[in-house]
Length: 249
Length: 313
Ligand SMILES: Cc1cc2nc3c(=O)[nH]c(=O)nc-3n(C[C@H](O)[C@H](O)[C@H](O)COP(=O)(O)OP(=O)(O)OC[C@H]3O[C@@H](n4cnc5c(N)ncnc54)[C@H](O)[C@@H]3O)c2cc1C
Ligand SMILES: Nc1ncnc2c1ncn2[C@@H]1O[C@H](COP(=O)(O)O)[C@@H](O)[C@H]1O
Image (cartoon, rainbow over all chains, first blue to last red):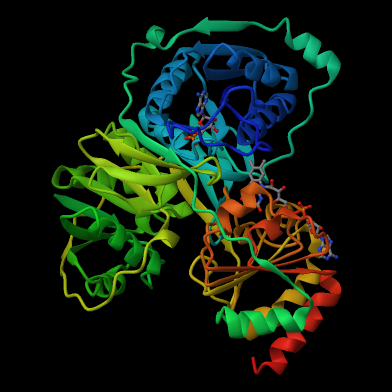
């Protein structure tokens, strides 16, 4: 089985996003960028499928600027076989990303795409579902655990009420949730080895798909700030404030 | 302009998230219809026709729709979109699962988790864990929108919409429902509760969440948690509040042993009043808390429960 893992380079999860003063977007100059955490989980899952002998080959793909190569190298250092970099400086929407990913999945003959349930920068949570639709594949979203047997994949999903199990006929898309696994750290020898792994250079034009944006950003603003509160002395004062000042209990 | 709202329900009861999504739809302007897709949906349809402002309720009743899996929902919704300019659904896991699929089939960019409707084509949505609010305008012919229900008031129930059953969704599907393991609770639902009390890593164990139960009982509160508490196995995954869990906005949110990471704040900072108990006076949670109690939770929680009792709760 061939496994494709799409990964996105995003503002590191530990960094607080700052809105640009002209309200055109979020300031990404000179800030730490990393692989989207859900995509790290996807990479880990693909590497585990390979270690278990289920996946014969694993491929990581990222669509983004030149620096997205670093994100691809991170995936390679974690154990993925090779990379595809679709270079663009445009901030493409999930619909366009999914169209490119569809072409990559078809060109590679992927049997399984494992990807993040959500990119923590734009918070769309849309690309996986769109890709599955375009390929006419089933989807297991927000996976908590996966089990491969023959031509099918059993996926336990995290849902609002608890956990739900579905069985997907392969090929399929699986999106990751936080509890699927704990991604490994790349070891130094593996980081060195990753430098020699191949990364194919592509551009969106190679796939002849329509990547025109459908949304225009009118403005990006700071969220409403909360007023600083007070510290209470003890539990008695807390109850008094909640009851008599705030009136919420 | 005609807008289709997809109902949130469990084949028995219509959920409040539907009423809130209807409010979002009505503010776009135009006629609003509600689709109830499920198995044995007659009762749910009966509840939906009462929602204020709704023109018609459409029902589709089939075994494959019992869990509203992605492929079957696509087969139901996409053909209906010939008659509609927009489709809206609550941003719960059920709808997040298939809405992107619908959007892709319509060749439309989905607008996810909107917290504001500016006009029929312009929406506000949080990005970067709610640290920025983006106003986006869609040029797509049809809008596919998921709605952060905590940001909208529920539509009332004095309406009398018409109703109509649709044909069965034909097709064979490549995914199959196997089973589910739902957390059972007599407490209110996390996203709908007026009071929420959440525990974090500081709780130390699942057993210690009992310290929150007595308080939750007294306040009629739902119980939630941070990611760290879920990852540690203290409580089930569906308790997670945050950027990648549930968004809540109760009248009162009480955070206990939670540091206040941006990802957690993303899910609760729109609460009306926030109280926090943490032994670290520098914990970031205090920057958003209206009332902060710097204390060891193992001492503070029993006292808090006793004081609630004294206050007649
Ligand atoms: C991709 C991604 C998505 C995420 N999504 C979410 C999400 O949706 N929701 C979420 O919550 N997090 C999420 N996180 C995790 C988030 O970054 C934090 O790691 C998490 O919220 C921390 O949980 P915590 O506050 O319980 O634990 P900690 O940060 O460890 O804080 C524990 C707190 O308990 C206090 N404490 C300890 N003992 C006591 C005591 N005896 N009495 C009183 N106080 C005590 C400590 O002072 C500390 O402040 C996400 C992270 C990533 C990378
Ligand atoms: N530019 C990109 N390149 C590769 N994969 C991406 C890209 N953008 C999104 N993805 C994948 O799609 C998932 C969901 O992203 P989103 O729909 O933007 O929230 C991510 O976790 C990635 O796996």
